[in-house]
Length: 308
Image (cartoon, rainbow, N blue to C red; front, side, top):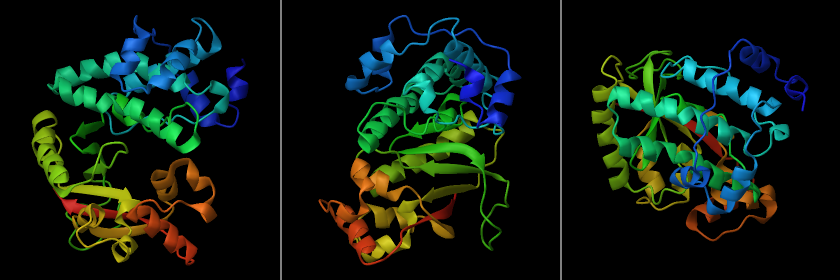
């Protein structure tokens, strides 16, 4: 395998990696147990083990530099270029990059006094995003491999039902928002496969976040939480009951920018989203999304904010 040829369409990423030294890859001695602890789906475990890069080979070289890129920017809001999804790397290459990075992330967590249960709940998003890949594509792999860079670099933490990551406010200047563009802000995310998005569960997550970040990142001043998601599309309130969990979640936020897309269809329907004309209508949400599209409507994502 010629790594440079494989990455020819990603010159900035290749240049970034070539500027890095390698870092010794320390992979778990008991790979299956390590994978299961990270919530990797059982049907993927054997395939991941079989895909282990060969020491000294081109994928090993690439993995060493990917790990160095993550470790050298641990904790920093200014990170490396995002990992591109490249079929030529195989479906599980980045799983090994993250396996080799996690001991460094764990050490960073320990230095900050972050509880073990928070660390492992956060790391389990690796397996969850492999389940998301199977849900959406019907095959093994890691969904959006760049996403776990936030976890591995110590930026994102799972606190109950919700995830929060340290970042910067990206909204446009609006009266009443206690932040300017570029100010520090927390981004909140709603992971899949985590049960109902109940108001009680969300309340508990926000309360945990209000204790967690001042305790472990006392030098950082967070006044705003933002959420960028299709869940905030106000059109949903026209289809769902007023007491639905999604509508209650929307009401927490002041709406800002709207954008097209937002990955709604894949999140709601999985692999069935490939044929928008034949979307299933098994739940209230599925019926709302499919009926709106059938009537010629468009769904949007929305950026919202709330005071922290």
